[in-house]
Length: 69
Image 1 (cartoon, rainbow, N blue to C red):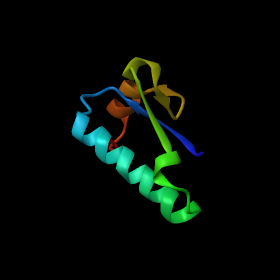
Image 2: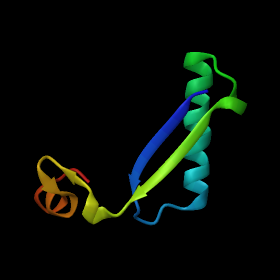
Image 3: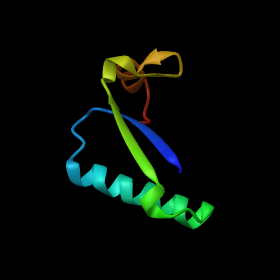
Image 4: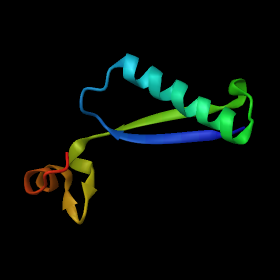
């Protein structure tokens, strides 16, 4: 029983986007590992932006300094 945990920032992700993410992650597990979709679980954790960092910086500061968004 595969369990996939996806962590994303909570920046206005729509239910439709999350449903597509769940479908896509499930499809990868079915295709790559040949696991049945009915036994594949996907958990989406939405993390507040101020609890996320990259390159040693809070995400908001990183975005100010970077051209990568």
